[in-house]
Image (cartoon, rainbow, N blue to C red):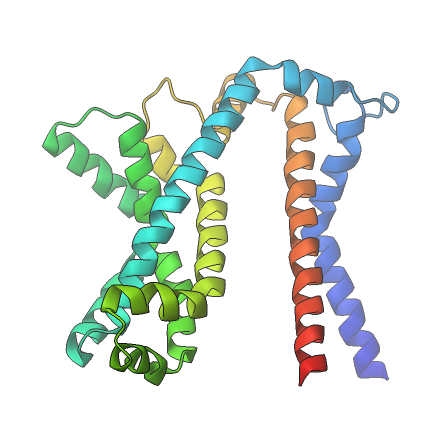
Length: 265
């Protein structure tokens, strides 16, 4: 009993440590004050100011556009790459698996500098395409890591049976392999979009100076004024709420699906 009580208390303390800043931020998003810690009455004024702030809305739009576009490209390339690596020969497979994990272990600043030097050497102007390439390079390895376990869990004889029954390799890919690895593909996409939304270093090195994302906007606002615009507290609260609701929906659906599978068994 003592061990269980200690374990529960430890978990509660860890959760409070992790989520206390978010809770405080959310609470003070409902009062119009410049600094957190001063309560000026309950209001939704910061939320109204957020939608009226053209700079914040433009940065949010740019961030979502880059994140969604790069995540779709990274998911397609990463999924195909994972399948190619999985069905390669043993030597090539081991080598490619090691190479695909280097960007994950590598410092992000090294990747950003490498891309910058490459673009300058080739003579490419920094624009949306260079930014997109940077985010795709950042997220592809994580898609590969998400899809590979699902490929390893799959029964390899199913693909071979499809070929024996007359299916072409392309047909077997879409009819047999893809349905088996959809959860891994979806997890890779979610991970890619999360990394892209949160990225600052690669964005700062590969973007055009006139193109603002939320990360560069927050950094610029802090550097210029020394304090963040209060309206960003409202935006942060909305983002946190959307992610929380999404996680709850996914967990509830997963629990219901597991319950249906157990009933059928």
